[in-house]
Image (cartoon, rainbow, N blue to C red; front, side, top):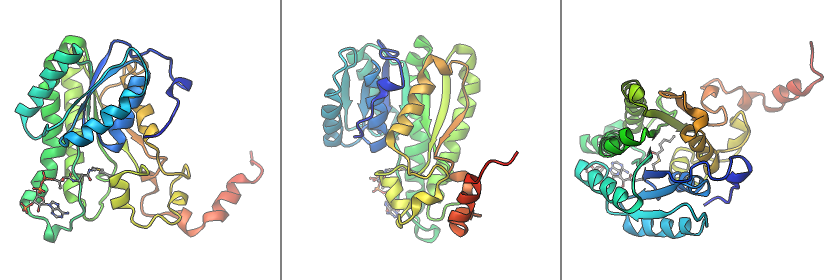
Amino acid sequence: MENYNYNNVWKEGIFDGKVCLITGGSGTICRQQAAALMKLGCSVSIIGRDQKQVDEVVKLLGKIGNKNAKVIGLGGCDVRSIDSMVSVAGKTVEKLGKIDYVICGAAGNFMSDFNHMSANAFKTVVDIDLLGSFNTVKACYPQLIKNKGSVIFVSATLHYYGVPFQSHVGAAKAGIDALSNALAVEFGPIGVRCNCIAPGPIGGTEGFNKLVPNKENFESKIPLQRVGRTSDIANATVFLFSDAAEWITGTVMIVDGGFWHMGNFNTYDAYPNVLRNKLLEKPKL
Ligand code: HXC
């Protein structure tokens, strides 16, 4: 987990008394989101399939040391099952008192070309990512309306263009954007906000390692000249849950250093220093 000082940027205690349920909470990105929320006072419920991994992350998060923030771990949960989700939502309320915030972070991913992808392989990822997000919101809905809560879906940018071997993930993530938009509009009048965060290439994650096998010079292909950090996603999370975002719903916040805008015409590749040197010449008015 990254050692990032959230209190340098955000006011201490802004989430005191709040509770967040996070599916996929033991994953690399979600555990950092949990850490940020806890540092600012929010208690978290880490939901995952693998009990051992959940326990490890709960132990790590337990060391954060904010006396207002508790952490619990609920392993053995499959987001594809509504019963499983209803059960962990109930246990979260039992142990932490309520649910204000929800992060739908559980995701499945493997590289597979269309020819070798079975119908069940496609369905598996769509079920984890998209149906899993639906089930998570469904299970937390009574708490969300009661507490005028807020949801963050974890999307991506890969469905804005075509990424080979990722047809299942692209389809699922496009569905997540659509789900978030529809729920934002439906839930707005009852005071519940829904937004997506779309991470770009975040170093150290399984997704990054699978999608970027050749990392040589990769940073130079990103406009902001570095790969993402899990704290970049955590900061976006804090913003979207905070009161500063009280009029923001139905948005997809892309956190990718400008990466997806590069598209296929990657001029950084062709003219790396020429372009930069021109930009750094004396400004012309
Ligand atoms: C082809 C595969 C496969 C592979 C599984 N399947 N792995 N097909 N290539 N590598 C097929 C199986 O053969 C089976 O189909 C079906 O998928 C279900 O597989 P199971 O193993 O039974 O499913 P399950 O145990 O539920 O596991 C699902 C899983 C999961 C998706 C494979 O283990 C998983 O999510 N692993 C990776 C987790 C991960 O990488 N998370 C990070 C997400 S990052 P058949 O037909 O044989 O029954 C992310 C970022 C995306 O999402 C965007 C980045 C920009």
